[in-house]
Picture 1: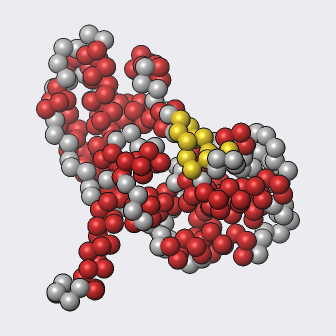
Picture 2: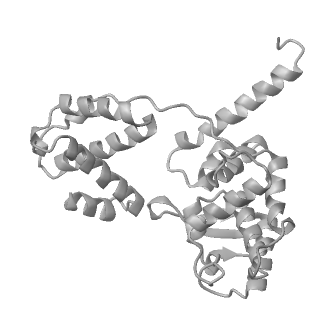
Picture 3: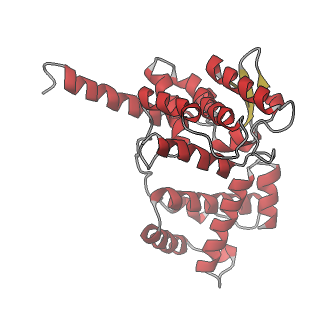
Length: 289
């Protein structure tokens, strides 16, 4: 296990989140079958385990845990610990085709205006509403993951080119355009909070604002604006991608902006736009019904 985790960190440049998930998944399998050695496992053992997971967890979680086991067994073959990867014969459940939730343009406009419209918290620094407005503008303007946004430093923002340098999954760096509105919101917040270096988004104690704090902040404004309760901060990323495609952006460009390694990950947003087009067609075309 230690060798595998070292391999993930070094050769694969996997994130700590991925390392934890893989380690947890492998340990869960060993707890299911504690008496056997790695080279004694059979395809039937994995099918039994897969059947157990399917009764307890959703398809996405099952696929993630089994993918971790597959990666581990490939590693065992690579290190000559076993000869055959018996997991290749175990068929995983097909992924669920869930369309991502997103906000309409009108809903997004309400959310972006919310921090400067609602009454600020008592004894909170005067710059906090400006900070919250900048966070929402950057979420929507650049389509960042919440972890990427939390990790931003002042030096990562270039106001001349209106771009932000982001360290994404697998420590892959990318440049994201942020737009004039987001750049202006960040400048106003930085000027009011007197932030010149270090973390871009800070708490009232002037420490880096963590991902969970940002998550709670966004949920607060979603609730204040009466937006659906099942919407999460990640839905702002979905909204970013959907609105780009609705306005004519090509899929490859959206893939690059989102930092997706595979185009298939981005293609789910095309289903959203097609469904919306079909709805418009059904409502508008005389021969639709």
